[in-house]
Image (cartoon, rainbow, N blue to C red):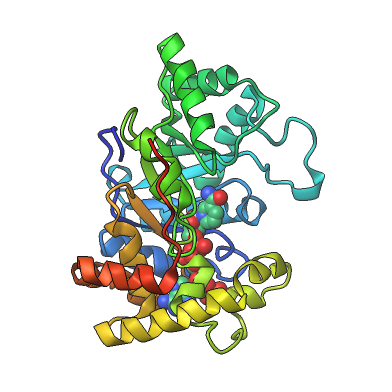
Length: 324
Ligand SMILES: NC(=O)c1ccc[n+]([C@@H]2O[C@H](COP(=O)([O-])OP(=O)(O)OC[C@H]3O[C@@H](n4cnc5c(N)ncnc54)[C@H](OP(=O)(O)O)[C@@H]3O)[C@@H](O)[C@H]2O)c1
């Protein structure tokens, strides 16, 4: 992972929206079992997912599976808190108090002794960066977390954290968790390039399928029970269910068919083709989805220069490189 010694599987598995809201313990058990048996060694979570219930569910599954703790990695993320509208001051954000308490609570919910990865789920403009870096360094020294990182921070914010770490001889952020998919490319392919080329950074990218849009499942409307049909997710539906994006996905679906693969496996393969992607975090609500998505590894060898160019021509989302 980036410049660290940690080995993450190129595909990983996360629980956002699905755990507790859409699936119960038995499906979570089935999906995590499939993932682990296929070689996935990283399970992603956060305090805010289903307001703590997602971590509890993953913790129950991990406990039941009884896998050797050294054979997998598990994460949590702090910032949003887990009490929703009831969050009081100090129950959110990146203060020493909340980061420390969020870590302790995640350990309890996940029923593990340490987190392999611990993320600052968003930047916090109200907390000095030195406080964040000292706290994460301290949690590492205490053995409660092994690597710390950021999620949806800007390149500048990440580099400011590195400067503080360097100044005090502390461990800086090792990984970032940005969105990366065929519709959202700027950070990985442009803004972060100088970070990859200097201090180095692993990436655990999220929504490789743009919440399912890149499976083609929304090409003819919104299927019942799918993510965009869920109550309270209009904001997500409105972001993706737009004519221009749907039109591109329809063309990509036809191209994937020509290649003999599903558009989902092609889209996931495309994300992990990028050498700056450490791992693409998959999401799934049923086993058939995960089976299809794991086929991304078979689609990967199809991504020749010509195929990559065809994909760019269809999607028209390749960012223009900045001058440095
Ligand atoms: N750091 C952050 O801010 C952040 C933000 C978001 C996510 N994440 C992480 O990234 C993980 C993955 O994100 P994501 O869930 O948005 O990933 P995604 O791959 O873009 O979307 C996954 C969803 O698409 C649908 N789907 C997946 N494969 C399918 C298939 N083959 N056919 C049809 N439908 C399929 C399923 O939803 P339905 O069945 O419900 O339609 C599934 O839950 C999360 O679990 C979380 O760990 C992090």
